[in-house]
Image (cartoon, rainbow, N blue to C red; front, side, top):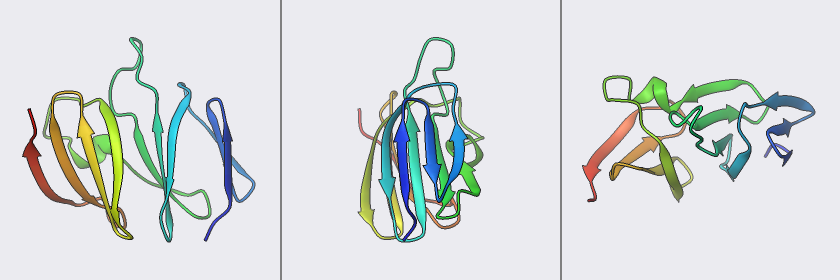
Length: 111
């Protein structure tokens, strides 16, 4: 497993610094991936979820996954298992994502 730490808007993954425009709100570690959710702001309200591998290399952003939908603001994330992440958006869309390849496994409306 990779080593990481974060403060404010920067995460350090195996000594690689990755900075975001917004403050980091939550980090979730999987076996070979690290998920970063930043705060959503008026200046940048959407697409606030990122995936990196344990070496700090970029894998995907939520925008890459749901590019056919209007921009989404991620409000919560949850680890389903070692390969699956549940993402809930501001508009009540629940998305199950395979963290290894960024594929959508399931989508449903919760509101």
